[in-house]
Picture 1: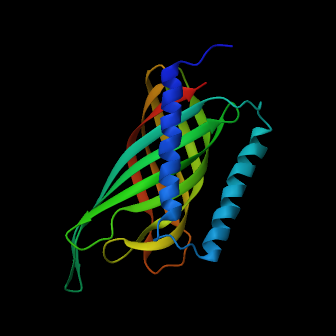
Picture 2: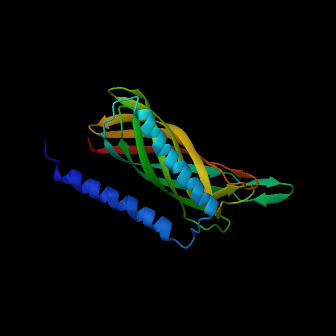
Picture 3: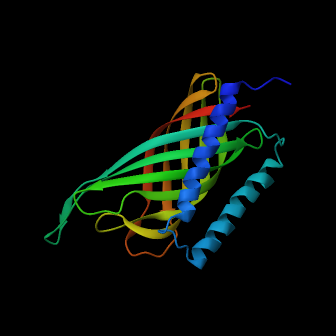
Length: 223
């Protein structure tokens, strides 16, 4: 059996530490008081995503393969506007994502993510915000130089967008979906471009999705 290089083990350890440190902060933070229904939604949808990925993978050859560490940055700007003689300040949402994913078959992957949202505005805003999510990904196209993935998942956290005004710290549950194109630039390393959308399930007046067009990178830490 081929020995795993020491630097790969170090990267894997650091990636795991970063992921669980973010998750621990998410759970222990005093801001996160999960309502019962949000807990149930999280458990049910998380379980369904992983169950569905496993069931679909039965039609494929089961092989626990690549483990990949990834991250991306996204910037979305909401411009200021005037409505009914009322001025609403604009704001910029900076999203920083860290995630891990594990290949469970030729085309299916499952994973988890932590997203930090830093919102900058001339109005007071309780930033940063955090989202934690789980997801399954399907490899739609696979080539020698690039891969195209579709994603479906679930996230929960304290980032809530609703018109008018800046985002508020409010517990929300989201359905997450999108796609990414990953272009290899070196062995085990890809540069990613894509779009993810976290659409709230909660009944909040004038709420809207967190949209994340992004630029990121993936590194294969085990194959």
